Image (cartoon, helix red, strand yellow):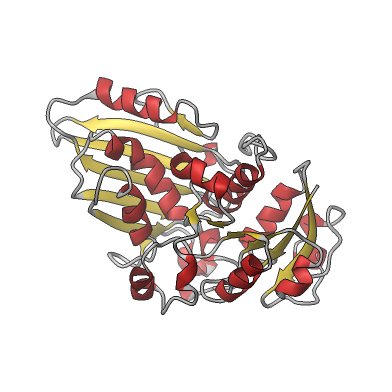
Length: 345
């Protein structure tokens, strides 16, 4: 039985991770660390877990956590958790980090979008935690950087097309719409208040969102640099991300080549489903699951490939991806504790 600690346990990502791990036959959650909820009882903060895990949230202190655990999940905000991650690695623990701190390979790129990197020496050791692209490396690493939720939907939508050379590498457009839980539980802004978001959809951080460099970095590993324009939107739902990606289709290619490339790329992937041609996914179809559904279409007049993807932003876009990586790091079946259908209705 693997003992695990979770820092940032009281956030949406942390508590969803707890819910998933409670169903994991090989894992015992032995320590919960907080950022702003120290000494509060988990069941008081999240009554849906009453009777499942009777735990008090302690401080996010590595020495305390590793006295009771062998692996650390860090769901702390960017820059806050990086020194603790470094300390845990020095102590011999494996770490799965939810923040942006170790996703980008270039410290200068991180500094442009966040701040000066707090632990740049660890960037070369971290593996981007998207199994569909980095399964082999995840199995061998001690530090996984869980991808951002927007990049997960975008990369899964575009990776087969980019790798197979179906589309031009420049001029790719990604339009994503996310539920409000992606903003977290404590980072409330005017835009996320009910009266502001209800009955409305709004673009934000246009041409400057922090997840943009992740998308270009990871698609760039599939044959060379790409140019992506990324626009995120906030929609009045709790969960889910719907991404629509557009790429200029290369001459002479059509439905047969596109569908063949996507089905070949994902034929062995347990959590990605390519829908029949002409079918389109909806966020409701994957809510509460670790699954990604993809829809394919071609705009013949404009010579554009259009790919839609849907994920649950808190599961496949965060905590479920973390469990998937945990399973790979430990040599367990990749689908352990994640083989559940979506919630309906």
